[in-house]
Length: 90
Image (cartoon, rainbow, N blue to C red; front, top):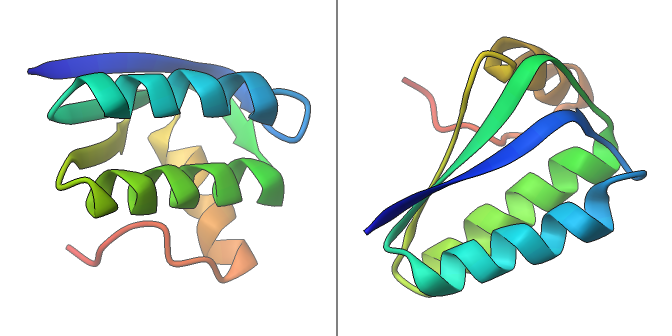
C-alpha cells in the first residue's frame, strides 16, 4: 500500500516536530510513503535532517520513502547547498 504525506511548503524547524510524527505514522502503516513538498517549499537543515531520518527509518523497516511534489527542486537545491546527500544519484 502506498500513502502520500503532504509536507506543505514549510519544511523547517518550525514544522519538524509535527511532520516527524506524520511521517513516522505513515511509514509504520504503508509499504511506500510519498512525501510531497508543495510549490515554493522551503527547507532548512532541520527539515532536511527530518527527511533523511524518515528515509533511514523506512529503510530499516524494509519500506520505501520517496520525496516528490512540485517543491522538489527547491528541496534538492537546499540539500545540495548544505552538502546533504538526501537523494540517490539518478
